[in-house]
Length: 345
Image (cartoon, rainbow, N blue to C red; front, side, top):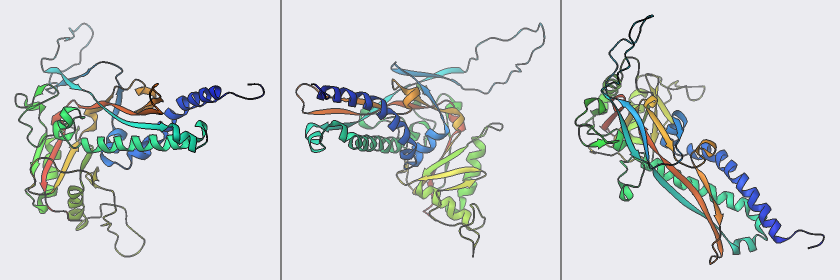
């Protein structure tokens, strides 16, 4: 129409703006949401992400034995190029998560036009992403069998309480001693927790290559904190007067031999439950996150499904999508402590 702009051009401008601004908005808020979910936040912050655009399976090479031969040579020596006979691959299927974001025609009318609902859409996207991260954070503590095995495989699958049974990544733990994580049973004995930590940390360390992060449910982390507070100053002092020991239950993490121990209140112990606490030690060098989103390299862990309206709908429906998996290529560098004594912090 003369002297103005048509509704169609406004719609096109809005959709173009949304297609460019929404992914940038999603990237900007991911770290904030991750920080509310300790396990997922620590894993994504400390491990590598490998984009995997397309395909139904992810393959990653593992070595079931530490190299023993000397790889050095000089001048005309014959170089050994034989394939290591203990080298194989793990195979894990990726999983998808989706939460919808819906924009109704009535909502646009109440907000007086499409351009006025941008903030409302962003709030809906943030809520959808947070719901997915909540699921992912919870599922990282499980074995992946829930929802007809459509979940990501978590610690219960990789770092299992009984590492001598079953298979993970297509490899038998029972038939490969090197494909077994380390374990300890605290037997609900609070006094033995530091001894158990030392035992599994040493057994999961080969040479100088050992655990770098310990995750656990809140009871497990608080038990360690309670023991450490009683005899050593494990954190920076709280306040400027009085005792120099922390002992503050609000402290989000403690350290064992320089390894951070992070508690997660949403973690329910898997396996036996003589004691309510559990800790999982991780060597993050052997973990990676495989991201199968189409724009994994640019939009990081999540992607926007642009809202669209079908001819018979009165609303536009889009959403937030996650598509990925966690892989561990060396189970012998990981550990789990079960049945930790009662919460003591």
